[in-house]
Length: 366
Ligand SMILES: Cc1ncc(COP(=O)(O)O)c(C=O)c1O
Image 1 (spheres, rainbow, N blue to C red):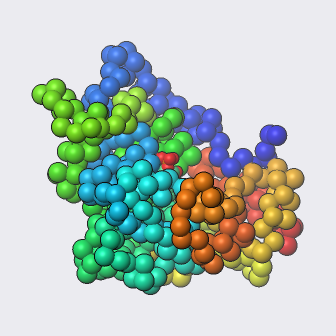
Image 2 (cartoon, protein in one colour; image 1 turned 135 degrees about the vertical axis):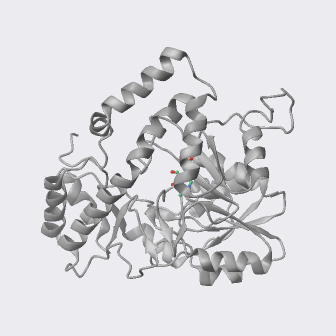
Image 3 (cartoon, rainbow, N blue to C red; image 1 turned 90 degrees about the vertical axis):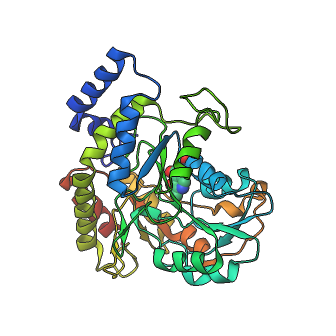
């Protein structure tokens, strides 16, 4: 179906920056610079600068950013890692594949880990916590870092959805041992295929991740230091991401503008909860514009019929899948979220007329 308002419009996004992307493509292809060349280093430097860390290591996914972070944090069999119950499955899968056990904690009304509930989940086996900055909003990192200091565990930030967000002056991905990034095509910063990264201030972590992403090999000496993984960021993707990174400040402003239009157009609907939480310490960048209502399924099909594409993150909590073998199972807020949330189109390609149309459709439903 051709949507009147698609959730994202990657072809239109390409047209917006076509000259720059085509130039980057030409530069890489004409020189044949495909693996670990200048474009990768340039992107890594610019990403680190943007996030506010000393280092960035380009990888092919957010999952691998999490996995390598946990390996460098020393997670081993028997170690417990605290993760939110409401997140993308990859957060927990990285823990399991690193050999650890995910220990789940419910989230609060802003969809991020409920910091007040973390303490109860801590045991002598707790070795790390992964706060996820979901939907473009940071988790409450002051509380997380305080607990980490008290109990001596590592903090790995899952910042896959929050490039450019901050909390109380702390920028997403710069607070914990590492920040983990995903450049899936439809993220705030999205490539044209797979992409991810780790940001960190720790030179040892940066070096180990750099070796692990390429089979554990030191490319300068040819020596192997670890059993590694093949998971680096392609040079061509890095070149594209470097172009797009330049646009991020202006694109975040656009997202905030769209969020403000949604807020103005929808705030008087009593049955609807909007993602605006009155706390000036947060700078949210609206990776997703998540609205919440008990009539979610009706609203979703109404909008689809009107040609408005919506997404639901997620209809079923990952821990409810038997096959994943996650032991902790009952999280009331996560369960209610899975029945009530829906994400409206939120991207920099969307026109003001389309935003107004979405608002009108939502109003018509209620
Ligand atoms: C919250 C969160 N964590 C982790 C990931 C990484 O997942 P993957 O690299 O498998 O896409 C994503 C991906 O979009 C994500 O949204």
